[in-house]
Amino acid sequence: MFKTQDDKLRLIQPGLIIVGIDIAKRKHWAQATYHNGILIGKPFSFKNTIEGFESLLVRIERIKQETGCKQVIVGMEPTGHYWKPLCWFLMKNNIMVVLVNPHHVKKSKELDDNTPTKSDPKDAKIIARLVRDGRFSEAYLPQGNYSELRVLTNHRTQLRAKLNGVMNLIHTILDEYFPEFLTVFKTFTGKAAMHILNKYPFPEDLKKIGVEGIEAEFKKAVKTAVGKQRAERLYQAACHSIGVPAPQAAKDKLRFCLDELNFFTRQIEEVEKAMEKQLQALGIGDYLLSIKGIGIVTAAGIIGEIGDPRRFVSWKQVRKLAGFNLVEDSSGQRQGRRVISKRGRSLLRNFLYQAAIVIVAKNEQFKQLYRYLTKRKENPLKKKQALIAIATKLIRVMFALITKEEFYDPAKVLGAYREEQIKAA
Image: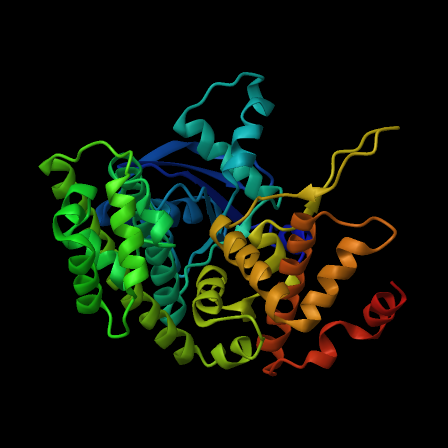
């Protein structure tokens, strides 16, 4: 793993061929250059098939023989998921693959010809020259348990999005046909509420069975009695509901939504069990779970997004991967505001931010740090800013626990200097 851009530039030596590849769904374009950026021949294309990949290897070998160069670096944009098969193929054939930021490619288009013209051959040349300038990151495709965790993490996120969509749709149905339902129940996902929604979802249904019928249905759903008082409240809500009379189609729609809700809930539970299994198989789960406030899903999600943490030289690289590194826009007399870059893995950033919200509530050391950051006299942070600072601190703690193979020690979290600051505040 490269620590600085100088480390990357040291790779760009005479005898090196740089191949920039513009990735597409069916056909990729490539441009070869020397280490100094001088083009080698014309851009060429190859198909996104095994035959196309093999033709690229043949082309690279021919260029090496013609130029006398021995080393090759292939650079590409991480465009969607289309880059992964080619990257995997090249890595299997012992060719170093690096990735350039699509944002850099977009910003560099006008440097050569002062026009915003876009074409695949032009992009391939730009990618090659960005690699020459050391503006790349090493390609990483997680393997083994890390690969399993990344897929599971992404799958869980997708399932959660679908589940939230279904829950929003159920809310919409209730708002139209029985808006008073959620004044009786805090949520419709409880056993009693779900049972009623499945059998007698709307006011006209509840009025037919009366208070005793509602109470009897409650007893079918839960072992402990929900109570006659709630049954009476639900019946009164049905009698005085302002909801639109529900047609049969609305009842069918609600039933389909409830089926989807149960389906996605079961799938999420299965995925979370698989995440727990993969996290334990890595041998680092116990170190992370020793942090009070960090649960299995959070730990597994963070590691799934990071991959193998030991490939990083410093925790600051993980911070940059998450897009939590600070940037500012200052010029002359104007002092710009420092903000996080958000140039990184958005899902990792979300996991860390959500973890920060929980950890300041459950972990005493992080709670003290959060209070200090928001209450200190000089440069107090706003709540969201403080949570981002907590998330960054969490990265540092987790990285240290994994690399040193240690369990969480509350005495080491803040350090003597920070503890003095908190006491003084």
